[in-house]
Image 1 (cartoon, rainbow, N blue to C red):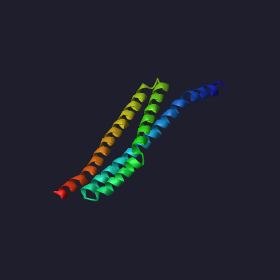
Image 2: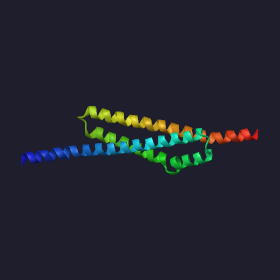
Image 3: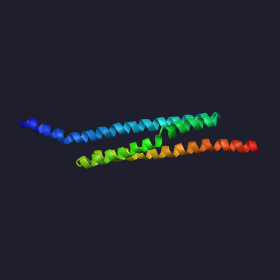
Length: 141
């Protein structure tokens, strides 16, 4: 009976940490998937732009994907929740310093990836908005 009680206490002790790690990993996978899809979308938009496709159609598609679908607020929420899970893991599992360092590194890496994607999204949008204006100025001359 004592061994059973000891096992139960061990499970109850480590279950919240394990749950936090699982939630972190699930959210990490979602963020990576979303950012890769966004990167693929941006690269496709740039390829279409190089092929001199209709910029208004590409801009509409860009706005639909990144503005109408609330991409930025959703990703900001994901990143905030990821930081929250990382802090939760760090506070609950003070014994696993190496694992906590890995969680911190993974969190910073995803945060940097998100920051780079924001810059790329803004640059592509700016490029899509600038090209029609340049063509209009050229035609007016």
